[in-house]
Length: 87
Image (cartoon, rainbow, N blue to C red; front, side, top):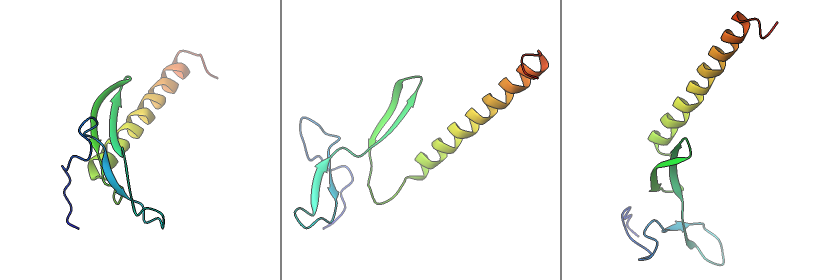
C-alpha cells in the first residue's frame, strides 16, 4: 500500500484519514488525527497527521510555547519581587 498523504477518505469531513491500528478486528480505522495549533483560543492550523511520527514543526511549536511560558513566569516573579509583592 503506497502512502498518499492528501487522500480524501470522507467528502463531508476531508480531514478524516485512515489510521493503521494493527488490531485483529480491523487493521485500519478512519478518524481524525489532527495537528491543531491554537493561540488565544483561536485555531491557526488544523492538519491531519500521520500517527507514526511527530512532525518536527509540532515539536518546535511545542518547545517555543514552553519556553515562552517559562520566560513569562520568570518575568512575572521578577516583577513581583521588585515591587515587594513576594518576600
